[in-house]
Length: 122
Image 1 (cartoon, rainbow, N blue to C red):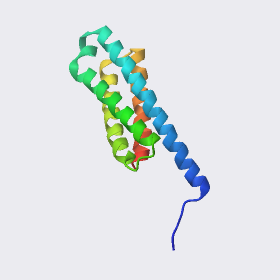
Image 2: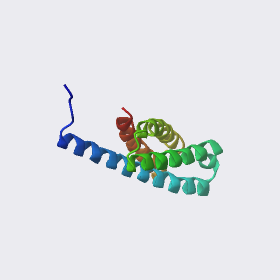
Image 3: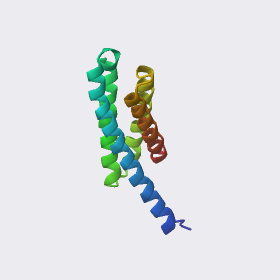
Image 4: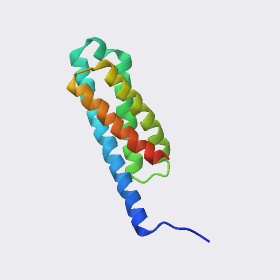
């Protein structure tokens, strides 16, 4: 006996994939803007480790969005890595940017992306 997903379940899954791809794209944009912000601020904000983590987040979010948008069966792998990198980026933005609105927004975007990517990875 074969069990197949109903039309409603497939539509919901497609909606979640689109939502995750959009969130990945948004997170990449926010992290890109945050790199510029951090470099302008200088000091601990511009430390190579932090800026490189932001750039890693941009790269994996863009890759995950691409995999999701074209329906790659390998999106689970990129989403898993994306969730891990986004969590690390959120923690680092929290650590460095206490009270800074741009850093808070970046951490929040990273957490939202991590949550959706984790769901897609499972």
